[in-house]
Length: 350
Ligand code: ADP
Ligand code: MG
Picture 1 (cartoon, rainbow, N blue to C red):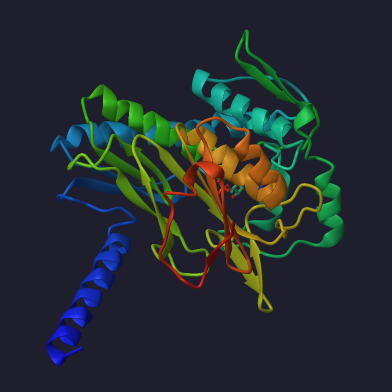
Picture 2: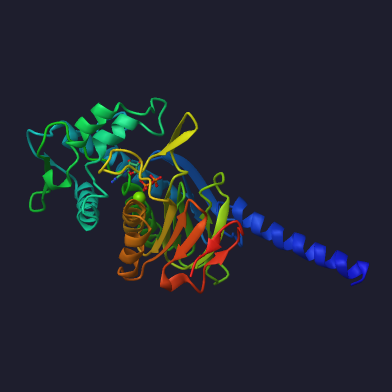
């Protein structure tokens, strides 16, 4: 090969590399045109809404108002007590009236608790509070205290009454925590506001929970980067192509506490009270509704590789990417032909 050819190939390779880096720089998505984009810190995360076929800021403002509304109703960390705070405070004594949306999210939370036989448990609140991961008070709890608090984790003792939209926690000290599912619901609500306003091409990014509206402005599928759990935010290990879908990831990288070189992440196993430690580093779910993507990503992370894969293979219109701590990637059958691996430190398994 002559020098000229060599230079040309190097230039070509550099350009290829650059184009992938660019995808990573735009929050994991390829942007064919500058969108109208706004960000806000809500639900404990940075949220960005990008419209590609509208310059109407009012649509985004309406969407953020709706997210704030969801946060006010469902968060247990907000300054003002939410409906969930009231429910938790009334544990062991009386039932509490809820809004339709809070009831719906609670109902889905209970659904995933039952589906996973309590690996996902919507009443994990007392354990989450004990660890405080993601806050300045995060600490490894005392083992005895942890064991005591585990007695308060039991989704069977959450009763829902659909007729009058009320809920009750049967034991005093019980706490619901919607952290594993509320962001997904918020993404769905934003999507419906955008669609109602005629938006056909948009990306909603709730701290890595992604929902795409339509296809991209060029008529091609959106390319979404799958977060590399061993690299900083916005480094991705592969790409999926999606239209009108949500891509939701749960993993060890999102929030964690490090003590004596050991990392404690925020997805807690109700069997032990400690972070799930089953060889998984992350799970990404690709499906239609973000509330289900969110519920399933946390659920499958807790179920582990084998049971998690089985669950997703048996769930319609849903695919998953499992990443193990030894950097192997397992794909469900529906995306084996379309997933693009970009980080060669990982191996896609058969
Ligand atoms: P992220 O919030 O990073 O998107 P997840 O959707 O996986 O990640 O949710 C993790 C959150 O879910 C935790 O911060 C906590 O509030 C809650 N959680 C932790 N363990 C469980 C569990 N076993 N069942 C249900 N919710 C859990
Ligand atoms: Mg989740």
